[in-house]
Length: 389
Image 1 (cartoon, one colour):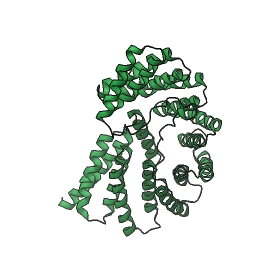
Image 2 (cartoon, one colour):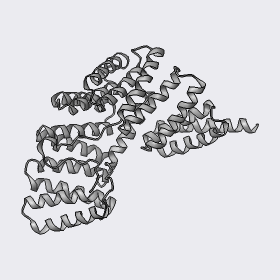
Image 3 (cartoon, one colour):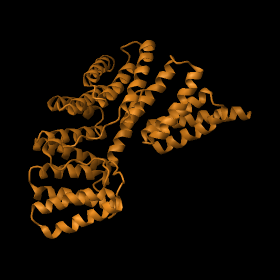
Image 4 (cartoon, one colour):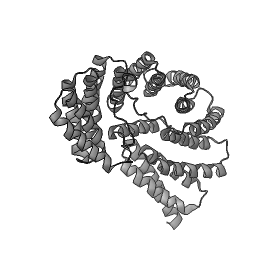
């Protein structure tokens, strides 16, 4: 076999292995395989269609695993090749724009996402018609960009269109329909239309429980718990967080650090009611998991120390308060400008959501960080990424 034929066979093998790894959600192997295919394709010239395909696969893996800048570079290079080979109105160009727009949504760059996704929508609609499921997927992504820009009416209209298409094409109980209801819930929650948000989260939950039964259900339960905290419906909040915790424990075990956020949220249910003694064991367990996972001087620990100190302060157990505040202060002095990362479980959920979308033949939105439950009450908020000063 000639060298060029051998390289082509190697490239095809790596591409196919990468696709299978994505199907299994084995992101380590998917990254290795797609990187290997890309390395081979780089030798065929800057406008080879196999290079574009390699860039698309590797960029998708990078996006799912959170390496967003590297993913953007892959998608932009792919776009340049496709524009040269196919022309601006080709459906492959639209697919690349769709991925790039989804990436900008993930980065929170919504104006850029809106522009790119609008161009992709126009091409998709021309090729497939207005009621194709690929168009519906694009509409849900474009709605996310519009919501990020607080263009609420337009975002809601796009979600209505997407929901109608999915219900007709996929049926009322499909995961994609559940995803649209989840997006409706987020859209309404951002507008303080909390009862409408609740209704859509519940619709999404009912679908996810039948179709998924695992991490996506945990995500929705966590979202609902935060909503019920905003509504000060303590029993509903506690029930949602307990169910979320059970799913996490079943999937990850009782000592996994990803449980810390939900343990904290359960503590917050009682803390916001003024029940410090009932909040204490939840905060203690969350703190222990974070300290075990990240060490006694990690930035992730500081918030938990401060909140446990508040619990003791409310119980007038002042002998414990000063030590906890001092420890938290020492940590913050060591990390004056660092960004506290979001909970790893949320990253895992983002990967799962994106990987499910890949199986549905198109990118979709990523789960957003949950809204602060302290927005109305002025009390302690749920854990979110923040900069320490």
